[in-house]
Image 1: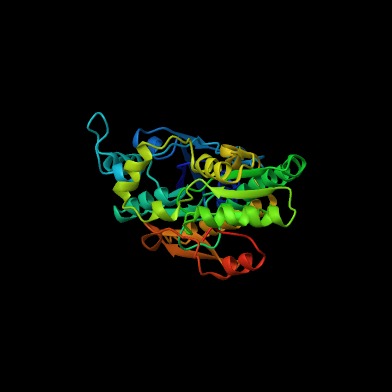
Image 2 (image 1 turned 90 degrees about the horizontal axis):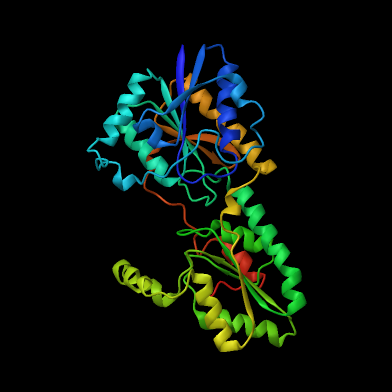
Length: 357
């Protein structure tokens, strides 16, 4: 019998359940006798032995269900080697749970931090297969992560809805999109939603350039402007600071987020009314879109095939419409950033969209 455990870690997103379903259905349809264990609440459950035995029926009806039926938690990678409040060795505890359950493989679904810990456990001798989950689409080694397109659709819908009210009132609207370190989500939603200005972390903005773009639209008779701003957007001045200097500056920041700072600067210098919309965690929620259901099913099936072949230590990636195994050691610790000189940025600039640079 093959004993396989599933674990979902970090922030939730659409298609986590759909991906687990893809793994489970493929395993159950194989000739192997399979038992699946669900680890509850992410790595926390692996540390503290929180788990449940799962049945084929547990994977029925979850293709369209958002979130994760196993629950999740955030366990920062940088603290994995630090004992918990009771002095427990977290890594040793996870290994002990793995061995106690007599697992043949641990399937880990998560983003960058999750994949770092997956690689750590692989290096510790556990049989691990990773699956790339994040609305940020920033995992190295895969063109696409499940959850990304669903989040793009939600953020795009938000921008779409802003257009009519922005036009009606002749205002500047800022839509703040999730993404602390990378701008894929803001970039795609901004393009799809017809934003006039897109600000992402990889391209530090000059507020003069942003205001210039708004004034140019006003002079052309445009009644409104829409900015798609990543929550991690940063000005050129702040980007020039050291990490320590920037953190110190943020301590005295009177604004709840970067969008409010940008909005205040625009209003002060142009006199135009500014409104800010923050869709927030709605971008993580709801049912996965059709595209995510397809790729999560494919990724799940491919992960199951790796397990059946006993090919461990890999994350299942998506490249050029093909599913490929990517060594966890190559994935861990790397971010897939938006290249400011990439073709997509050049193409979007040719449309007249301003990036504030």
